[in-house]
Image (cartoon, rainbow, N blue to C red):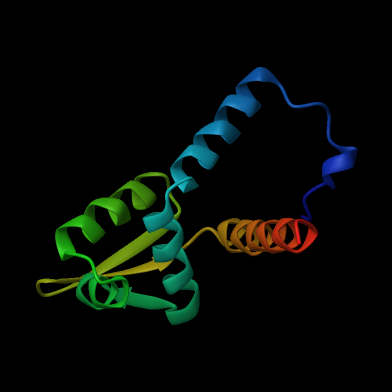
Length: 111
């Protein structure tokens, strides 16, 4: 069943606004945004590969991935000692795309 358009929905309740704020707070981190973009590009990738891509320590990457997984944004699978992450919430991909669009549009307007 398709979701209703935003303009056709009832005004956000306080509970809905708080839940949405929580989503934005989790995403309001430059490392997490870069991780999500890498996952969009790669599909599924391991912690060590992500650490290499972002030039960060694997433990720091793992901590950020766990926060995203705890919110239900990422899924993972184990293969021996390796953990591979993927985006399981397709709305996040759309949100990143729209956020990047907003950012680029704002930058273009300010010139």
